[in-house]
Image 1 (tube, rainbow, N blue to C red):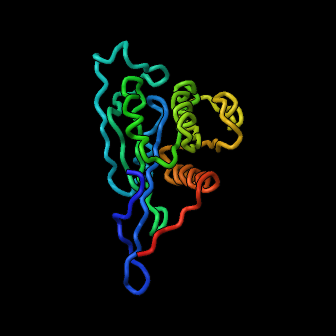
Image 2 (image 1 turned 30 degrees about the vertical axis):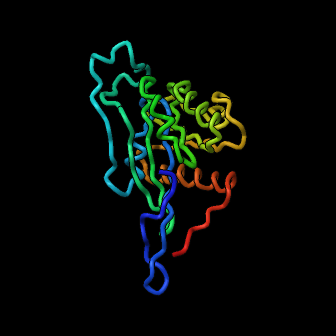
Image 3 (image 1 turned 45 degrees about the horizontal axis):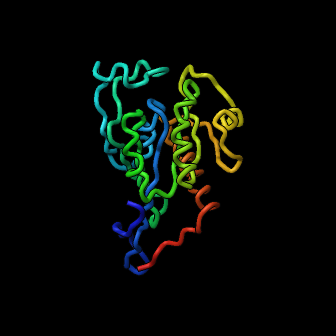
Length: 204
């Protein structure tokens, strides 16, 4: 789902304006807050594919730093947010565990940009997401999800640790807070406008 015009919005003189739908990804390591971020932002009940972590995953999934986590996303999270009447973002949260990374190529198909969530307790867990989007030329921003009790680092310290360029926005955020999450998404849209062809809504 790259973009489309399936949602008609009211237009001038009672007509309709075709809404452009853009696909964005929310990626990162296991337990960094992707499901929480999608749920916080979505204006519709989010679609979630979470399952209980069982003993069958012992020795397979790395729970370092998130030992208290009891569920895991096994396919994707999906949500929707309207930025403007003619601009709708569809959010797809990727699974974070190594054994589900085969799904990333399919989820990334048609995506215009991404949020990479990072957790300072396990910064190395978001390296695969950074490498994935850099390798495919997909613009992204890094959101450092500030968990309670987690070590606090400045954005430039995180930038250096992740080895991302100065053109990539790095922000501190709280995935549980709607305004903080909206600021992260707004920064991504602004980043896209600087790095891609300007968006022009189609008129019906």
